[in-house]
Image 1 (cartoon, one colour):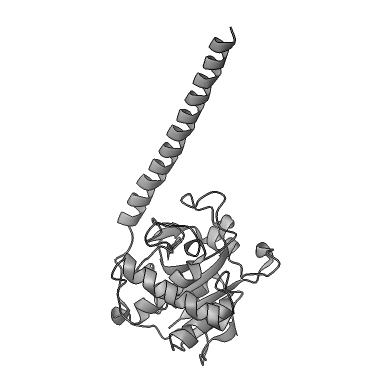
Image 2 (cartoon, helix red, strand yellow):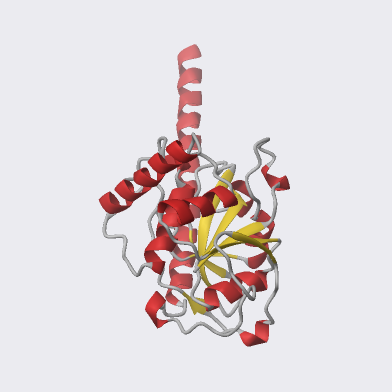
Length: 267
């Protein structure tokens, strides 16, 4: 009688595994369908050269990698929706999520922002791979590590490695500050507590620390992002509350949800 009982439990186990796989697949398919519908309704993406910057500025005199306080813009002064044509790459362009690629969200975010500013595409996975590894080599030499760079260290990558100095570190930004920046044609890099983003495409439980690029916003108030943490990250939409709540700079004690609220404005 032992063998039939054992066979029964094996059968039950197989059914449970198959059921979990079906549920997981159905969950992803639902998100894929919703995401495709959302992307179809996004405003047309505009190139850097096409952007006409409004007179509204975050500060009266920008300095390279300056740390500035939030100066929120009045929503009525901004376009109803904006979508910058920032090129996308996942941090693992060849779908190899082993290190260092599992830790290259900062490098990918910087690369996307800089290529947009320089009006350059990301030509291929090989192009992205080589560019991100070159940034990593700079970080290893400059900081002694490449993982989990803070907003200030990420700004240093832009100013020192790319020799591009129109970078601001904005502390305690409001959602209106993000909209103001992208409306002016400026990519916004956000450091975040990755698990608080609740991205359904992240490998469970998600990254402790993450970085992404905000490239626009919709009429309904969602932020359009290029999230390098998933191959589905191009034009990924986050609710305003989700992104603002998740925004946190890196802390060396790993207590990421106590990290400062900060963003990088590039341009």
